[in-house]
Length: 508
Image 1 (cartoon, helix red, strand yellow):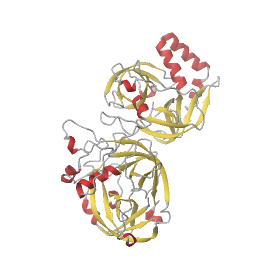
Image 2 (cartoon, rainbow, N blue to C red):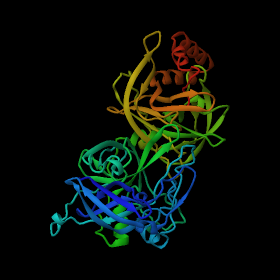
Image 3 (cartoon, one colour):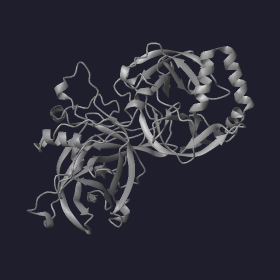
Image 4 (tube, rainbow, N blue to C red):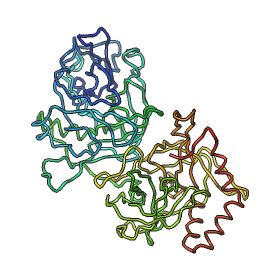
């Protein structure tokens, strides 16, 4: 897939604005994010109305392609494609193209989720026409266009900081993965024929990119097929860009087909994901004050869930949402080990578990530095009935701390962990066995109000400790007291206590 840069010059400014783009039907039809045409970037607390007229308020559009990076070619706006009526992460207003066409404006760019982390997502893309003379009369270059899945590794060809560096680095490639796929919720009052149901309409991406890559194609590393277009970053005040959104290419083609009469795309083929079984174990825990945490089903037969104790302050009863069904169930806290290890066990008697999901995941007997891992949790936003799947991030075990008996007491990873992921399940990427549970990332506190978060240095409890504690809870009070004393005698508590200093907090 050839990289491309699109730039414009506003009538009110002598400065160019530029970003990457995706070549669609042939070498001349390029899709770019609508944000390229904003005069000013979005600010944290404001909502910007979608004004189609701003697309035409410029002195000109030019494209530069990777094969001819020094040659800027004139282009023009062909069409604005509104993808969502309102860019809410709930996706309750993702409409069919026919309905979009009738209610195309005004659209808006809004916040992502209901957390303190602020973010922006765009509602539309713009199609730009720039047919190079070298391609006139030739057959269009066809690139396979498919849906990506959770865990798909992607490559992103684009140009970093094109507004300042032009096309000097147009050959740059960044890498990442699809962390979550979100589909349109199906409501009883909505006509099913008016909603896109043939695949995801939004990706959450775990990709480290820089400004200027917005609009870059998402290329699947294993097949070379294009699965989407890079959107805008999901940002945090103290971390910066933590995730990015992406637009699935088949969803875009569906809108193009309905609004422009483009060639119809064949139905999607659903392949089993490597995360299908672990997804059935992931849950979100909800407290009465509106907070939430991640967790996983430690005992399928007895319907017991484990999470972090710090996420359940002074709680006796909570609600637990299963990621497979999206249904909330009442749960009762069996025991909290707060003060020794940051974990709590919750009994959820009404938790619905299908026969295919009834078997528990196997445990990993050891944790080794360098192991490839995946974390399944619920950062960014609270899981809902229609969007209950966790976000997946990947990384490696970076260190292992041992107790006085040379057993694993803590391990750290470089996978991305942010607010909401407390209690998330950690898996061995090669075997899908449970390695442990996330406790926190690293937060360095400066004074009483300011702190810096390091999301890629996080602390986890090994599964061996979790299951020793769970067996003690099942056995009763005497066993619980014994295991608490054992954890103290072995130095497990001492190892965890060393994380709590005046400058550092290990709780999300």
